[in-house]
Length: 132
Image (cartoon, rainbow, N blue to C red; front, top):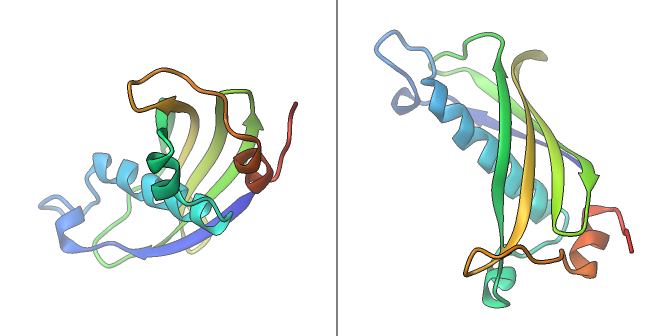
């Protein structure tokens, strides 16, 4: 699974110098992951109704260059691994093809009480990989 989306940096995303506040990159990554999952045909509302959610278990991010007010950014999301109850993703934020941030994440499938759950087969199929 690979996905790309575009977003604009708004004034509210920046500090007084017009540079994107570091924590807002995490919001950009979340939007990218949500849109990637949606594009794969996974309805997270239906998942939640079935008692399952995805949560970030681990993230490692490297800030490479600043984004600024009014920049047009691309968030790239790629599935890099799939296990029974978790999956790994690689994400990048780019401006004009130049990487501004690179991140590696692990997401877990949990029930609503916070207990790990095996990722359902239909979701693994939608993500593009089936492991049994």
